[in-house]
Image (cartoon, rainbow, N blue to C red):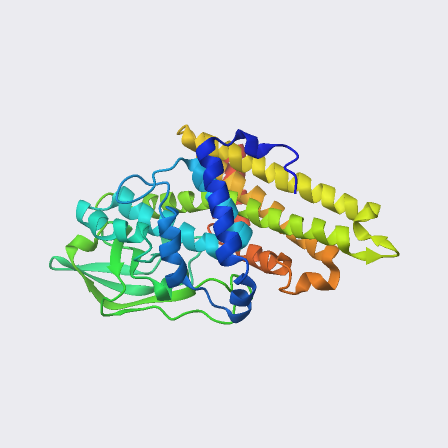
Length: 384
C-alpha cells in the first residue's frame, strides 16, 4: 500500500534498514504462524528471543552491555513493524527492553548490569516487570506487595497480575513497598518462594504469555535492590519507555488492518463489481488511512522529540491515547469491510482488533491518559 504522505521519507538510512530488516523477519518468522499461535494461545518465546537478540532488537535503545544503542525513532520503527505482525510480539520486545532491561540499565548496580543485560540483549535470558497488582492497577501507589528488611536481607511478600513473560522469565523486576518507600528488586525467578502461574482463557493477546506473580516469604540479598531510585519515579519512568513503543507499535497494527481491508475490497465481488468500487467502502478506507497517517505523524513527531531530549510524560499520554484509539477504530472498520471473513484467523483483522482491546487498557488505561491531558490543560488533578 502506498505511503501517500511519504512519512518514511523522513527516516534516515539506518532507520530504513531497521524497518526493512524487521519487516522481513516478521514476514518470514511470524506471519506464517501467528494465526495458529493466537488460536492455540502459545508464543514460542524461547525460539524467537535469540533471533530477536541477534537482530539487536532487545534493549535496542540502550547503550552498552551488548545493546544496539539506536535512537528513539529507530526503536519506534522496529516496534511498528513488530506489531504489524502481532501485538504480542511487540509486547515481548517492549517488556524485555523497556520494562525489564531499562530499569536495570538506568537504576541498577554495576553487578546487576553485568549479570543480566548482556544475556537479555542476546535473548538468552528473558525478563518481566512486576508492578500491577490484582487490586491495584491504575493506582500503583496503593500496592500491597511489601519488602521488609531482615538483617541485610529482604523478605518479599505479595502478588502481581497481568505480567507479560511472567511464567517464562528468568528474572523479574519487582516493585514493592518498603519502609523507605517504593523500591525495585531484581528477582531471579528460581528464587524459593517465587511462582508465576500463567493466565488462561484470554480472548486477547493470545500469542503472548501473561501470568500472575506470587512472592511467599521470598528472601533476597541486599544486592537485589535497584540502588539508583526510590519511589514511584522508578516504575513510572519504565512505563514511559514502554508507552513510547506502543505509540509506534499500534501504527503497525493499524496498517496491517488497513492493508487487509484494501486488498479484500479490491477482490471481493458483490453486485458484479469489487466492493472497493462502492462509495461507502471508499469512504471507510479513506478515513481509515487518514487515521493511520495521523497516528504515524504523531509517532514520528514524538520520536523526534525524544531524540532531542524534549519528550514529556504528558506528550506520551497524548500519543498513547490518540494512537491506540485510532488503531482500534481502524481495526473495527476493517472488520466491517471483510464482513464474515473479518472474524476468521485467515485474515489478521480480528486478531489485531482483539489485541488492541488489551493495548487500550495496559500501560495506562485510556481514562488515566485522558486525566493526564486534563490536568495538563487545567492544572487540576482529577485522579481522586
